[in-house]
Every structure is written in structure tokens, then in C-alpha cells.
Image (cartoon, rainbow, N blue to C red; front, side):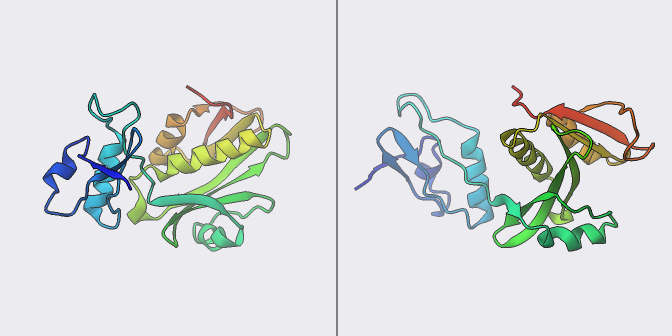
Length: 202
């Protein structure tokens, strides 16, 4: 039987109109039992993720956040229609990921191994529904693809974006990409080319 402990951040002591319950204390770890079904519950979990417990309550006491949006590999057919609506040129032989909120697909991304260089991948498509933007899903999708490329033995990732696509530029730069000038303008002349190593960056 788990011994109940007062919440390290004081939320459970206040109970917040009875919506939140106390944490369960298992050893030296506080396990949050707050439901994520409500918007207030999700906000509470997000706040807990950024804080550590007060001194004297144990070494590793903090809530572990389970993101409400899951990212997983999907077959090409799952996002082909999305890509067609954007007017993009579909390329066979790629790998794709979907961002799901429950069972609903709210974002996607893909990459293709380079045909010119055996140690590089090309991040060739990504998109997030307008109502799901502002949650940094683009960055999560970028990092997911980089992690896959690293595990698969690829050393470099390249991509390009239109100059007016500022949100994508910001996300790529935040994930370590830097502009470069390729020997051949394989994506066109009026685009911004970016690249980075697939190695982990501190």
C-alpha cells in the first residue's frame, strides 16, 4: 500500500477546488496521480515538469510528464493525402512519422536517404495542423528524425525551406541546423539550405 505524501509543490495541499489528489510516495519518488483529461490537469503536469521537489523530500522527487501528443512511425499512405493537399512532389522510398493526439493525426514529418551521399538524409516534408501549432511539435518531429538517422548510421542531415517560412527556419535553427551553400542547388535557387550532424549536441 502506498503511503500518501503531501505534494512537493503545495498543489495537492490546496486541492485546487478538489480536482487534484495527493501524490503517492513510492520509496523516495513522488508519483503524480493527477488526471490529464482536463486542461487544468495538463497545465499542472507541465508545471511539475519544470520544478523539482523541495529539499528534504527525497533525491529524485518530481512528476514525470507523459506528453499528450505521441510521435510514432507511420506508413507513407498515412500522410500521402496531407502532402498532396500542400502541393508537394511525393517521393518514394521515404520514412514517415505522425504526431497523434489520441487517435487524431495532427502533424507529420518525413525523411529520405540521400541519393548522392550514402551518409546523409534529407528531411523533405513536415506539417502541423493550424490548431496544433505553438506546441513545438515541429521541433519534436525534427529531433525524432535526427535520432532515427543517428541510430541508422547516417552522419548528416540536410533540408531546405522557403525564406518566408520563418517558423520552420526557427525550429530548424533551434535544433542545431545551420545555413550552407551546396555545390548544386538541388532544391532551387530561392531557398535556404540547412544542414547539421546527426550526433547529439549539448
